[in-house]
Image (tube, rainbow, N blue to C red; front, side, top):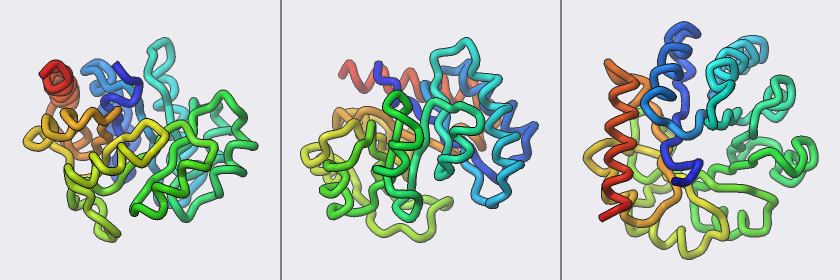
Length: 209
């Protein structure tokens, strides 16, 4: 199973205690990677939250990815960083984090997808597969057919993100995509452990069929 298989992206609007609980539960339920997001720009808060998540992931095989901020990733020695299109250029980020850390990049249209093939990346996040309440400024909705096309173009593993839930998950996994990134389906679940566990099971069944 790919390390990108069930990729949890944290909700930066949840307080640190909720964050710790969600990540603890989600890891117990079978998430394979965790990305810590913090959009407020408050670096001390970001470091504190990222450190808390790092403590949870210690002695697990679950990788810790920091959203946007290379400095935070370096400060806490995270496993990698995920960049958006308006963040630091991938080539500079790679020089700073070194060859052994994971580097992901959000891709929002076909031009970016083609350009990404020449960048020193480990994976891409394809956004948005479907529209979602957390992303109101969507450039493109890829849908299932767009995802299939992107997989033919990209040289890198693809993590699908945006509007993914139990209803559409099987169709997405059956494209052969490397993973799915989820926020609300796990972060906002009454029981994040159960939600993660059911999603992981659904992924495994979809891969077999």
